[in-house]
Length: 416
Image (cartoon, rainbow, N blue to C red):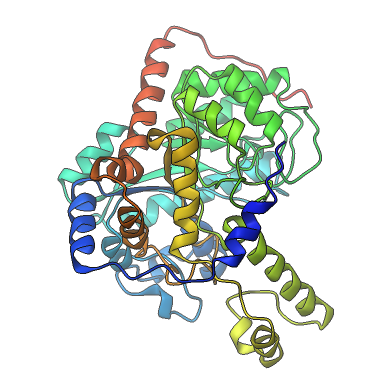
């Protein structure tokens, strides 16, 4: 949509690490995040527990440092506390290859996993569905736990299923994941819907009616534009960054950042280096190609155990992606869309084995706030970033649902 080839080159040239925050800045960030703890838009712990630990939720001790496990995680209770997290949207991710009844069943399994680890730690977590719930969790010293579906394939094309997911506590749905649907297009697949089909528009309208947040991460530019033409409530991008800073299709271009601002929505910045830096993404593609060519693992967690891959990385140093790179995206979105329209959706445990330098887990959020404070952000704007913006969206979505309370549900299903 827009050509900004110079931005990645400028970022690639800036290899100097962001300075360590001084004591005064750390104290200031501690104060801000104690009053307004971070609400993160996207964490894939549930899928990691399913795939790495055979869904044996209770066998994984989240009260200990899970980065030390044989199959390490990026999330645990001590690091959530250190990271000043007050609310977490737990992703109910399933692969885009699963469709129909299988997708519905796997999504139910994911809901069960989240509910189990939340209930296993009642002193730490509290299930939440509203902004008031999030605030109540804070007053009780707990981390509000919210759920979001990561792809429109997960309700099997049946709006009755979507409504039941909402009844079970699902608060947002990402309209697509990596594959286009018959009714909405993905940013990383060929278009099938040309934006939104009539059924796609009905999905958005029904989400507005039942108080489910429309999440536009992963969708194509045309789909995002179409959503903003239909929705009555603000949207979120639960884990997306700025395309002007890193030219990736998963990131959002400036014209659509402005449209999201006009809609009252929030773009929550992703911490995956491939979305933060095109230079890092090119480097990563080269190392994956090397691994495949030589029949070696492409699992980043196992990378350090393979001498040939360690040697390749030594000969091809990793481009720097650190807290300054993350801050570049946050700063850019704030400048284009406004400080009222940016948040955080780090994607931890969806980026297992990687992350910005010094930011490998959920304990790292204060580093970002310290860097933004160093760049001149006010306490009020830091608090908007940490939670106030997403709470405002939640309240607006709730208000829209109340206004539509007398609108009957639609019985439409995916005709595709």
